[in-house]
Image 1 (cartoon, one colour):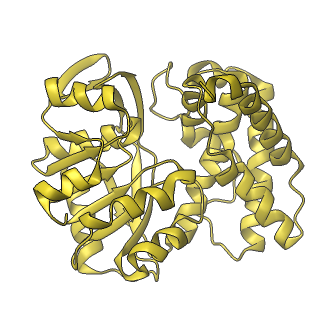
Image 2 (cartoon, one colour; image 1 turned 90 degrees about the vertical axis):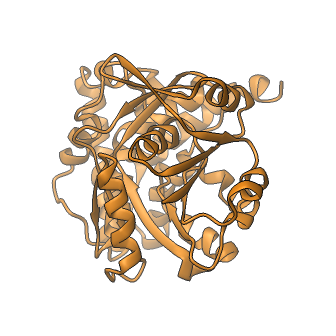
Length: 316
């Protein structure tokens, strides 16, 4: 397949690199010039269990540049930060042809509505992945996909040839992928995992190995997940579990001790986080349905406070 990863940071490079290894033509689009130039010069280095290997990929900072070479792609994977979705998909419009499938694997909820406004709802697949990635340096990324599943699906729950074809390509690349008939439930299942660890990792500045050693952190994570589950029920969402501890356990399973949640990675880079689309989404939907969410409100407030402290960095 001809695949473009829009927002090829840590996770995008991890998945894109595996897809390229499996024989697909993969283009990685990232706004960071140093990262792109390193991949162009030396390939993408995937680090797995402490062992490096180099994968040949195409990399660019500009979707128009990619489109000039490839024309429309078969699959456009959207992995940009939630707050960049509209701008990013608008820039990628030249890559979307009559048969292009657009797949969002972003954290949080609500991206499909934004994407549909630009490319049309008929182009979209939705999904969630538990694969992990972390950029160590430009062009070098930790990949954590062993035992980590990915779920994709049509928005209406049907099983089509195109979603089956995409899932097959992912599985061939070693990305354990299933087609979901309940993709909104799948999206909320992943939201629970992000609710459990993202903000807490960002606030404590702890990597997963240390985060999971603090009983008080675990108790807070489970309380935040309980709130999110109550909100999901109020929204009519069918979840795959009723155990609030399950997302907490799943979040850290199989990841290296030093692995860092994406919110922590963002803060360490001096960037704003996606908290508005994770814990913040729980708070908003809870308010809409009359479900109290004090734990998630507190986590959002703490992350917002840390982000405010980054303002001198963000303005440089």
